[in-house]
Image (cartoon, rainbow, N blue to C red; front, side, top):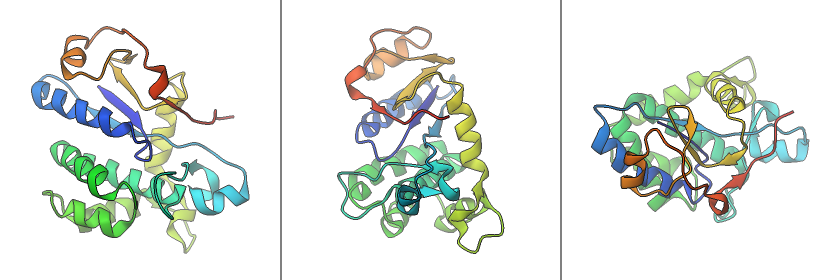
Length: 204
């Protein structure tokens, strides 16, 4: 079971909440992985605030947040992926706290406070984020990012640019977000949720 999302999309919270219930119910029988959704931009004006790696990985600035940029969203996405790699239960716990306390700011201070309420070590999260970038640029986020590169390759294979989305056994889930429905339809696709998606720019 895979979730493709951006933390700047408010409806992602409902996806994660539903999937946490499913994971807790079926964790001995399923594998779960969240994936970061980004897009590419060639606009230098846009890149200056909303991207990392010179426009290779971008996000929209959160309209509900005061002062946060798309780059803040991308960096928060990497933190969430790093936390997932350390502990799936703590990923869900952190996501709940983030959407409750940090959704309006996307700043590192709030993220740190949220991490400290889990069993994850903040210093390890920082180290994971820093190690995901590699290159010679002094400003770390100008370098390429291996984690985001891997995520982008997975997204290219989906055949959709509408997010957030859940894939179960490599099939796009089209049902409701009820934990009962998701558990029941582990192998089936039902009703498409058109009105809940955010459309991301298509990659060239």
